[in-house]
Amino acid sequence: LFNMTVLACDPYLDEKTIAARGAIKVEKDELLRRADFVSINCPLDDGSRKMIGAREYALMKPGAFFITTARGFIHDEAALADALKADKIAGAGLDVWEDEPPPHDHPLLAFDNVLASPHTAGLTRQSRYNIAKIAAEQMIDILDGKPASRVLNPEVWPAFAARFRRTGAPARRRASVPSRSGSGRRRSRAAARGCGRPTRADRAVSRRSVILRPESPSACPGSPASLAGSTA
Image (tube, rainbow, N blue to C red; front, side, top):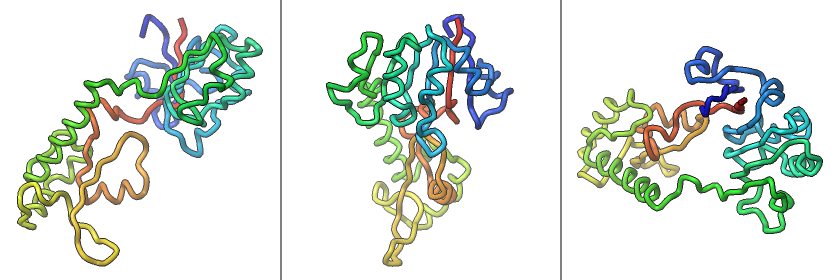
Protein backbone atom coordinates (compact mmCIF):
# COMPACT_ATOMS: atom_id res chain seq x y z
CA LEU A 1 0.00 0.00 0.00
CA PHE A 2 1.83 3.13 -1.28
CA ASN A 3 5.11 1.25 -0.61
CA MET A 4 4.37 1.32 3.12
CA THR A 5 4.61 -1.37 5.76
CA VAL A 6 1.09 -2.10 6.98
CA LEU A 7 0.60 -3.06 10.62
CA ALA A 8 -2.67 -4.50 11.94
CA CYS A 9 -4.16 -5.11 15.36
CA ASP A 10 -7.15 -7.46 15.19
CA PRO A 11 -8.32 -9.69 18.04
CA TYR A 12 -10.23 -11.96 15.64
CA LEU A 13 -7.53 -12.74 13.06
CA ASP A 14 -4.33 -14.70 13.60
CA GLU A 15 -0.88 -13.72 12.38
CA LYS A 16 -1.01 -16.00 9.34
CA THR A 17 -4.35 -14.64 8.13
CA ILE A 18 -3.24 -11.05 8.55
CA ALA A 19 0.01 -11.79 6.70
CA ALA A 20 -1.98 -13.28 3.81
CA ARG A 21 -3.81 -9.96 3.58
CA GLY A 22 -0.57 -8.04 3.34
CA ALA A 23 -0.07 -6.79 6.90
CA ILE A 24 1.93 -7.58 10.02
CA LYS A 25 0.04 -8.47 13.20
CA VAL A 26 1.10 -6.40 16.22
CA GLU A 27 -0.39 -5.39 19.54
CA LYS A 28 -2.20 -2.07 19.83
CA ASP A 29 0.50 -0.18 21.74
CA GLU A 30 3.21 -1.24 19.29
CA LEU A 31 1.08 -0.16 16.36
CA LEU A 32 0.47 3.25 17.91
CA ARG A 33 4.16 3.78 18.61
CA ARG A 34 5.34 2.72 15.14
CA ALA A 35 2.69 3.91 12.69
CA ASP A 36 2.86 7.14 10.73
CA PHE A 37 -0.85 6.81 9.92
CA VAL A 38 -3.21 5.18 12.42
CA SER A 39 -6.57 4.14 10.95
CA ILE A 40 -9.55 2.88 12.95
CA ASN A 41 -11.70 0.28 11.14
CA CYS A 42 -13.96 -1.60 13.54
CA PRO A 43 -17.55 -1.77 14.81
CA LEU A 44 -18.63 0.08 17.93
CA ASP A 45 -19.24 -2.28 20.84
CA ASP A 46 -18.42 -2.51 24.53
CA GLY A 47 -14.86 -3.54 23.73
CA SER A 48 -14.13 -0.72 21.29
CA ARG A 49 -15.97 2.17 23.00
CA LYS A 50 -13.38 4.82 23.99
CA MET A 51 -10.65 2.49 22.71
CA ILE A 52 -8.57 5.50 21.68
CA GLY A 53 -8.10 8.18 24.32
CA ALA A 54 -5.44 10.41 25.87
CA ARG A 55 -3.16 7.47 26.68
CA GLU A 56 -3.26 6.19 23.10
CA TYR A 57 -2.67 9.62 21.52
CA ALA A 58 0.35 10.05 23.81
CA LEU A 59 1.84 6.84 22.40
CA MET A 60 1.69 8.08 18.80
CA LYS A 61 4.57 9.77 17.01
CA PRO A 62 4.53 13.59 16.93
CA GLY A 63 4.44 13.35 13.14
CA ALA A 64 1.68 10.73 12.99
CA PHE A 65 -1.84 11.23 11.68
CA PHE A 66 -4.98 9.77 13.25
CA ILE A 67 -7.70 8.59 10.84
CA THR A 68 -11.08 7.05 11.59
CA THR A 69 -13.83 5.86 9.26
CA ALA A 70 -15.35 3.51 11.84
CA ARG A 71 -17.91 4.84 14.33
CA GLY A 72 -18.22 7.70 16.76
CA PHE A 73 -17.46 7.04 20.44
CA ILE A 74 -14.56 4.70 19.57
CA HIS A 75 -12.15 7.60 19.90
CA ASP A 76 -12.35 10.27 22.59
CA GLU A 77 -13.03 13.55 20.75
CA ALA A 78 -12.03 15.79 23.68
CA ALA A 79 -8.76 13.90 24.15
CA LEU A 80 -8.05 14.20 20.43
CA ALA A 81 -8.58 17.95 20.56
CA ASP A 82 -6.17 18.16 23.50
CA ALA A 83 -3.56 16.09 21.63
CA LEU A 84 -3.81 18.33 18.57
CA LYS A 85 -3.65 21.48 20.66
CA ALA A 86 -0.49 20.21 22.36
CA ASP A 87 1.08 19.15 19.02
CA LYS A 88 1.31 15.55 20.23
CA ILE A 89 0.23 14.34 16.78
CA ALA A 90 0.44 15.94 13.34
CA GLY A 91 -3.22 15.89 12.38
CA ALA A 92 -6.43 13.92 11.98
CA GLY A 93 -8.88 12.77 9.33
CA LEU A 94 -12.37 12.27 10.77
CA ASP A 95 -15.29 10.66 8.99
CA VAL A 96 -17.32 9.78 12.10
CA TRP A 97 -18.55 11.76 15.08
CA GLU A 98 -20.32 11.25 18.39
CA ASP A 99 -23.05 13.53 17.06
CA GLU A 100 -23.58 13.34 13.31
CA PRO A 101 -23.44 15.82 11.80
CA PRO A 102 -21.18 17.61 14.29
CA PRO A 103 -22.15 21.15 15.30
CA HIS A 104 -20.44 23.94 13.39
CA ASP A 105 -18.67 25.07 16.54
CA HIS A 106 -17.23 21.63 17.32
CA PRO A 107 -13.68 22.15 18.71
CA LEU A 108 -12.14 19.69 16.25
CA LEU A 109 -13.43 21.66 13.27
CA ALA A 110 -11.36 24.65 14.36
CA PHE A 111 -8.03 22.96 13.57
CA ASP A 112 -6.32 23.60 10.23
CA ASN A 113 -4.76 20.10 10.43
CA VAL A 114 -8.09 18.26 10.71
CA LEU A 115 -9.91 17.02 7.61
CA ALA A 116 -13.58 16.25 8.21
CA SER A 117 -16.06 14.33 6.05
CA PRO A 118 -19.75 13.47 6.59
CA HIS A 119 -19.54 9.65 6.73
CA THR A 120 -21.09 9.27 3.28
CA ALA A 121 -18.01 8.49 1.20
CA GLY A 122 -19.68 5.58 -0.59
CA LEU A 123 -23.03 7.25 -1.20
CA THR A 124 -22.55 8.61 -4.68
CA ARG A 125 -25.50 8.89 -7.04
CA GLN A 126 -24.36 5.73 -8.84
CA SER A 127 -23.85 3.75 -5.64
CA ARG A 128 -27.31 4.67 -4.34
CA TYR A 129 -28.79 3.50 -7.63
CA ASN A 130 -26.81 0.26 -7.53
CA ILE A 131 -27.77 -0.46 -3.89
CA ALA A 132 -31.47 -0.09 -4.69
CA LYS A 133 -31.18 -2.06 -7.94
CA ILE A 134 -29.26 -4.96 -6.37
CA ALA A 135 -31.66 -5.18 -3.43
CA ALA A 136 -34.70 -5.18 -5.75
CA GLU A 137 -33.19 -7.79 -8.07
CA GLN A 138 -32.42 -10.13 -5.18
CA MET A 139 -35.93 -9.84 -3.73
CA ILE A 140 -37.48 -10.49 -7.15
CA ASP A 141 -35.35 -13.63 -7.51
CA ILE A 142 -36.32 -14.79 -4.01
CA LEU A 143 -40.02 -14.18 -4.69
CA ASP A 144 -39.73 -16.13 -7.95
CA GLY A 145 -38.11 -19.04 -6.11
CA LYS A 146 -34.73 -18.47 -7.73
CA PRO A 147 -31.39 -18.40 -5.88
CA ALA A 148 -30.32 -14.88 -4.96
CA SER A 149 -26.92 -13.85 -6.27
CA ARG A 150 -25.52 -12.53 -2.98
CA VAL A 151 -26.50 -14.99 -0.27
CA LEU A 152 -24.27 -14.82 2.82
CA ASN A 153 -25.30 -18.27 4.10
CA PRO A 154 -25.64 -20.41 0.92
CA GLU A 155 -25.70 -23.62 2.94
CA VAL A 156 -29.35 -22.97 3.88
CA TRP A 157 -30.56 -22.45 0.31
CA PRO A 158 -31.57 -26.08 -0.53
CA ALA A 159 -33.75 -26.39 2.59
CA PHE A 160 -35.15 -22.91 2.07
CA ALA A 161 -36.01 -23.60 -1.57
CA ALA A 162 -37.72 -26.88 -0.66
CA ARG A 163 -39.86 -25.18 1.98
CA PHE A 164 -40.65 -22.35 -0.43
CA ARG A 165 -41.88 -24.83 -3.05
CA ARG A 166 -44.03 -26.63 -0.49
CA THR A 167 -45.85 -23.42 0.40
CA GLY A 168 -47.05 -23.06 -3.17
CA ALA A 169 -46.40 -19.32 -2.81
CA PRO A 170 -47.34 -17.32 -5.91
CA ALA A 171 -44.38 -15.66 -7.54
CA ARG A 172 -43.46 -12.31 -5.98
CA ARG A 173 -45.96 -12.66 -3.16
CA ARG A 174 -44.22 -14.62 -0.39
CA ALA A 175 -40.57 -14.79 0.47
CA SER A 176 -38.30 -16.60 2.87
CA VAL A 177 -39.00 -19.07 5.56
CA PRO A 178 -42.15 -19.10 7.73
CA SER A 179 -41.69 -17.87 11.29
CA ARG A 180 -43.96 -17.51 14.30
CA SER A 181 -45.56 -14.15 14.99
CA GLY A 182 -46.72 -13.06 18.41
CA SER A 183 -50.26 -14.25 17.61
CA GLY A 184 -49.09 -17.75 16.74
CA ARG A 185 -50.00 -17.43 13.06
CA ARG A 186 -47.33 -18.27 10.53
CA ARG A 187 -45.85 -15.50 8.44
CA SER A 188 -43.07 -15.43 5.87
CA ARG A 189 -40.04 -13.26 6.23
CA ALA A 190 -36.71 -12.58 4.59
CA ALA A 191 -33.65 -11.42 6.50
CA ALA A 192 -30.97 -9.04 5.37
CA ARG A 193 -28.08 -7.76 7.38
CA GLY A 194 -25.07 -5.51 7.02
CA CYS A 195 -21.48 -5.78 8.20
CA GLY A 196 -20.34 -6.50 11.72
CA ARG A 197 -20.24 -9.46 14.10
CA PRO A 198 -23.47 -11.56 14.27
CA THR A 199 -25.71 -11.23 17.29
CA ARG A 200 -27.55 -14.17 18.91
CA ALA A 201 -30.65 -13.17 16.96
CA ASP A 202 -28.62 -13.06 13.73
CA ARG A 203 -27.36 -16.59 14.31
CA ALA A 204 -30.86 -17.88 15.04
CA VAL A 205 -32.22 -16.32 11.85
CA SER A 206 -29.27 -17.60 9.81
CA ARG A 207 -30.24 -21.19 10.53
CA ARG A 208 -33.65 -20.83 8.91
CA SER A 209 -33.64 -17.80 6.60
CA VAL A 210 -31.74 -16.65 3.56
CA ILE A 211 -29.52 -13.71 4.47
CA LEU A 212 -28.80 -11.37 1.60
CA ARG A 213 -25.60 -9.44 1.06
CA PRO A 214 -26.76 -5.80 1.11
CA GLU A 215 -24.68 -4.22 -1.61
CA SER A 216 -21.80 -5.94 -3.36
CA PRO A 217 -19.55 -8.99 -2.83
CA SER A 218 -16.92 -6.72 -1.30
CA ALA A 219 -19.27 -4.89 1.05
CA CYS A 220 -18.60 -7.24 3.97
CA PRO A 221 -15.12 -8.68 3.31
CA GLY A 222 -14.77 -10.25 6.76
CA SER A 223 -13.80 -9.38 10.29
CA PRO A 224 -12.41 -5.84 10.20
CA ALA A 225 -9.14 -4.98 11.85
CA SER A 226 -9.58 -2.94 14.99
CA LEU A 227 -6.58 -0.83 14.08
CA ALA A 228 -4.44 -0.48 11.00
CA GLY A 229 -1.23 1.46 10.76
CA SER A 230 1.16 2.30 7.97
CA THR A 231 4.81 3.23 8.23
CA ALA A 232 6.81 4.82 5.46
